[in-house]
Image (cartoon, rainbow, N blue to C red; front, top):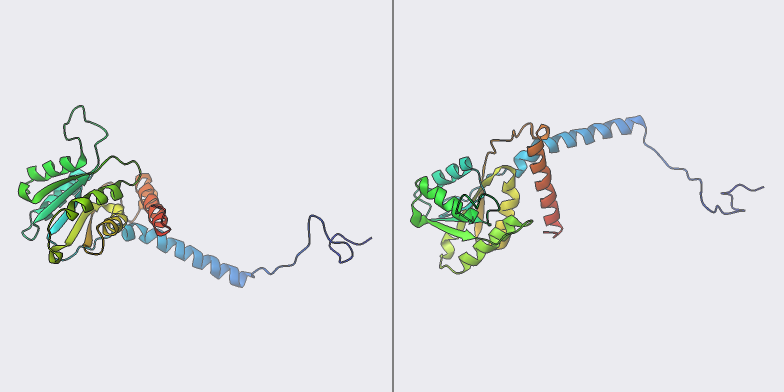
Length: 226
């Protein structure tokens, strides 16, 4: 009787195949290389996301209104510098505490906080955005673009730096650059997140969640999912 995989009788469900597997001389170096690559990615992921690349002598500043107070303090110190002429505070509606505080929107909260920290009020502009549950940064960036399109800022002054927090920096800079367009040069300053250790982020639940979510969002952005 012919076997199930002989030419005399073709197999109906299964068929025997022969394939090549690597020897230990190939497998061990490959595993070491993969482990080293994984370690490099884990070690440097936080710093790669928490990028600081400001545009030199930029006269304009973006402050994301959701920032914690210590990051707003850093924003205020930068906004009070003499080369800064315009500070745009962006934000969506505040979804908690509205029965106690009357800010209503993170843009207003940030602008009033900066004012109390000594930033001249004539420098500050509130740019409120509608509520968004997913693309909050892009929603704020689009609201800012609409506002900037209505201004007469000269082309030579269309340089702007974004103040944001920790690992949000790279994606947020990319989003604002995409929305503002090529006529604007967008830089970014990442304020260190006081709740995260850049060297041990993978051992901290909140930091790990931030890194992973930012990497996923950046990957989706590459494929146009945002």
